[in-house]
Image (cartoon, rainbow, N blue to C red; front, side, top):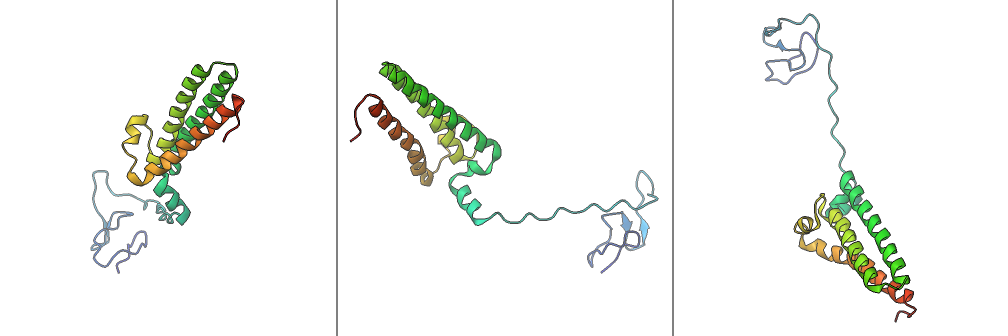
Length: 168
């Protein structure tokens, strides 16, 4: 295996050129360039280490919720869902004031916001709800319905409780 006479790096058996300092390994002389010969060999740059494989739990989460593995998408999805929770609380407050139709309208807007956040986490990208929903494959539709239907059912129970009726 040839060794570069200038930087002492081992090269492959069929190497002709040292890629660190530009020495022709056949002659031991620098290859002429437009800038002339270098007086000193360049500093050796540390090569990046290969990243270790992700843990199994991250791969499992990434298969179902790829948006959680991307920081911007995860933050956007979680912030939109938190905003939806605030809108739902506003809807319950308005319902308690005796304006059920306004409360239902505001609650529906909150549910759409929550669906947007869930869809971002399921698709793994930022986008509008109708664009993102087209990218959710069949195996994640059940999870989408569970994550959006759960808050809807909870909201309906809270509306019944706020109206003075006990849930069945």
